[in-house]
Image (cartoon, rainbow, N blue to C red):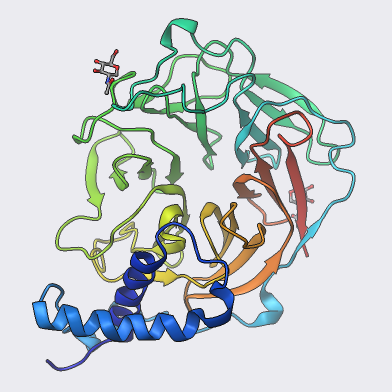
Length: 389
Ligand SMILES: *[C@@H]1O[C@H](CO)[C@@H](O)[C@H](O)[C@H]1NC(C)=O
Ligand SMILES: *[C@@H]1O[C@H](CO)[C@@H](O)[C@H](O)[C@H]1NC(C)=O
């Protein structure tokens, strides 16, 4: 054994933490988590070394080459701070659960909502089959384009198309990339068209093969046209495709050491060639190499952001080299927004106050940030606007 890298230690430690805490941080977590955390790390490393389950030898030089952006924190002055826009929207909306928000190339916030549908115990059976197919798709428009200044609805579409909306990402060309957890499919649409240009997954047929998806959550699209699907609630994997929809790779892919638990949202940081994942039930953000310009670095240890106050991460979005995230209800932790520097693997800011945030998006020019919530009525199903100052 030559070196035990910090990354390997941290990864083991996080595994230990998850093993100890399960999906719920104990309420006294904030008090003595650090101490217990390191005890657990030490204990786990000892056990792993005895049983030789995980190689602890990591080539530090190769690692440094792969991750040369490491330990170069972003100067505080250049980190934008989200500031809430009060009284936005000026008129109240009457959306259903707003599961996704994205910003179109013109700077309009666009939302995807469930209208009168809720995802509850009667939605899927134990084989992940959607129970309510015979009720047909949602009749109301599920997509609304909003005015960035007032929040008023400018236009909408997406009626009679979707059953249980989840993710929506608008790419640089204005294409809409949508996931529907009931249909177990991911789609690429031109706006206002009802026929998709691309479909991934089998309609209403969940599965774990490379042809199936199972409750897919989110899509990220690169300027190269390559795209990533977070798949999702059952398969806990990311699938990477070329622009034509040909599968290129699956993340994780053996011998990659990355175990996801409900990748709930994804965002690309193209400059760093990272795909940052809201790894919800692991209560962290992990950023493996996206492999956009070359496959160099694919399979290397992912940048990992996990701190005791992060909790279950529901949404991620990015601007430049910064990730903005929202957590969701996790034991007693505050539900709020986080500003993350993936290069130093650190949370560098906290902001906002939410109840059940589900999605976050930053506008293309970085001037605005939106957060949506999945509540129980028209007051709590809502959209928040922040400006990035
Ligand atoms: C960003 O885009 C919005 C919406 O198109 C526009 O109103 C705003 O002036 C832009 N801001 C900058 C800094 O370019
Ligand atoms: C779920 O529903 C499908 C279709 O009706 C059925 O084939 C399957 O056996 C059901 N699974 C369970 C566990 O009930």
